[in-house]
Image (cartoon, rainbow, N blue to C red; front, top):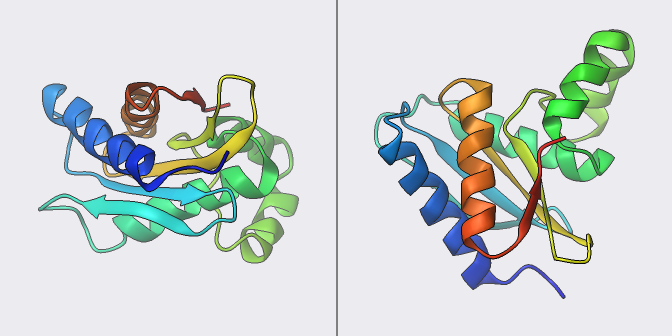
Length: 141
């Protein structure tokens, strides 16, 4: 089953609700479908100029490697030259926490969400909260 627009909207809305409740800095959220196409996105007032692009890079890298961006970040430490080159090939992927695979209950990948604006750990926490609120499974790596 593909990621629905309704589910993508819930992920955006609930990720931001989690961030506001936790008093995170302003966030940008990008939800990509399984093909890597933007299904839903939002940038809160006060986000810096590059936050949307960073959020998209986290989600894009997550989809490209079928791994959460936290795991990609760990791998980048071990293989920095590979990841420096891969960032160019994978639509500017950003290998730090905040990119989460979106899966159905059986584990099939439906898409990814990337968030940027606060610490990477907080970005990931907001993404996982949004995915869970949509009734889906998040995998940050």
